[in-house]
Image (cartoon, rainbow, N blue to C red; front, side, top):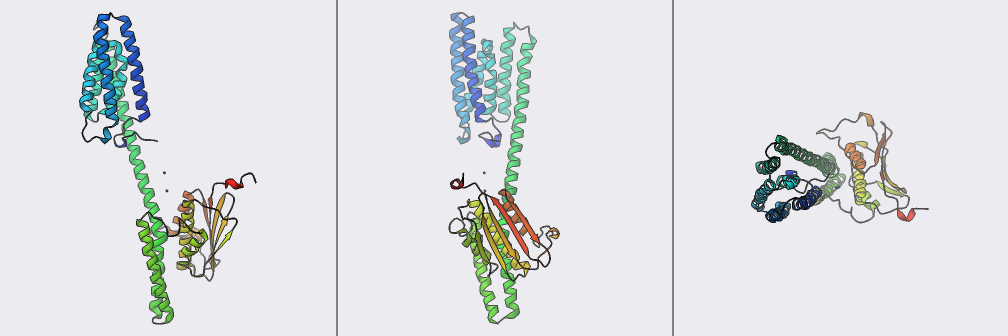
Length: 385
């Protein structure tokens, strides 16, 4: 009433699937680089270099696992492992520049494992060691070998930082949008339950005050008391899961009639079409629209008769709330303010959020019809008929 962010959303880290690709790339490049080195160097050189490469692989695996679990760690236990990996990698790439292609995976792991200045230091050390190794391979003559890894490291750092900032902004905007949506939802719930009930209770008490101590006044007081009790129940319901009494179970027409009669005693609910089970969110919307429309009839319409019609169609459900009151001009309804005016807006928002439509047919002196239509999934038992 539900862009996948990285697994540690607050810091905007690389998505787990990208991590997997980086780790797989490291493994493939390490194997390819080791084969290349063994084929081009004597056995005496191979032993220690391959042993150092194996140590780098072990450190990489441990660091990757610990960095993946860092959110659950109270202390950054992976920091010494990452530091050892960077040192071992620097030694390997300087001694055997054939492994330089693996620097990309090391760089991304340092940025995944470290935050803030530590990530810059570790990434910079990785790029510097690669630059020294390649520069050494060129017999200290090819400046491009020295500057290339440094420039690539700086470029990757800028790109990585930009991605992190964009993800943080996206997360912040999604949180803000979620808060705004929740505020709208809660405001509609309060309007359709507490506010409408209090307004009706106030009208009854004012009428009782004018005619007290007549029997009609006592009846109005009792009715107002019942409304206030229901308001209290609705308020508690809002605090606990924002669910309406009778919404999750029981026949829908009875729930609609109960909601409408809180405000209009004589209202009746009629059903057309073949009744079917409705999704909870559709039931909730129908209940609140009925409740809000009935409250408007009580507060503004001065009607003699009112009715609710619930209609079942093959692919939709309709709700029509009619009264023969004084009507109004829908185009002249003032915008919501502290004095009220939220009813129609809240009803329309509820219906449109579920892909439905709400229309208001009224004119001064001609009564009012509020009509809502909500789409429903096609009943499988009716398909093909």
